Amino acid sequence: MKRGRLKVILLGATGRIGTGFVEEYFNNKNYQKKYELILGVHNKKFRSKNFKVRYTLIENIKTLNKAFNRVDVVVNLAANPDPEAEFNDLIKPNIIGAYNVFEAARISGCKRVIFASSVHAIGGYGHGYEIKANDAPKPIDLYGASKVFGEALCYTFFSNYGLSCLAIRIGAYTSNDQMRNVCFSRHDYDHVISQRDMGQLINKCIIAPAKIKYGILSGISNNKKKDMDLKLAKKLVNYVPKDDAYILCKQIKKPAK
Image 1 (cartoon, rainbow, N blue to C red):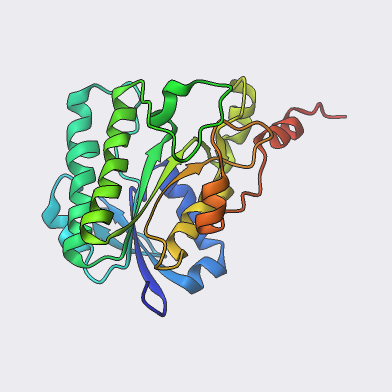
Image 2 (cartoon, rainbow, N blue to C red; image 1 turned 90 degrees about the vertical axis):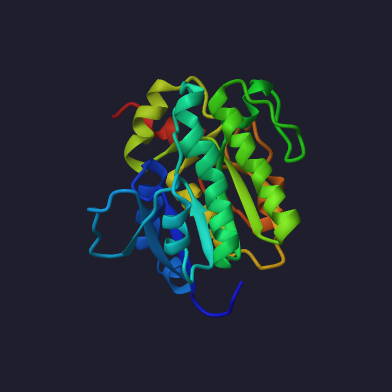
């Protein structure tokens, strides 16, 4: 990465995970010292009093080329997030859009892309097995398959063009205001990731040294029981998750005296 304060564009800034990361960034001066966060949105009318905003339509590479001007790192959270989506609804945002982001980043001279993959890329393993970083993808739905395609692009653009790429297999992302609902609605918390830990993991990927060129990382908190191995994320980008969803939910469920 270049010396000095990086410029980072966040695609999907108004989505669930994007909104949470913007909040974490806004409340963390250490994040702010390292890089300027620019919001990439597909609504031309969207405005922010705290952040610069750039129009990004991932289905249109021209808008991305313009938005990525003088950007160091692209965080791509933009996609159709519906696990039950039909293929026709995934083609533009998750297939063409994913390619466009990588290609625009390459053309624009960006140094790194952080790609939001999903636990759905490895859903075929089921519970009871801790998935390792080098285990083959096993998607069981088309959404998961689309995320595997994005992971493949990660390696393709790294190996062919030297573009640094880190993919995060995001588990059950839980914002601060949704933690209580998750605690009472789920039977297990093996792949839950809290807003704080998700923010830290994205941040660590952004500021990771330039020599870190490629990796597929597990996006979960430090839960008592896990279905994804965190060793690579800890080693590669120094991810140190603070939360354990089992402990958080035990505290939330504890009867009031």
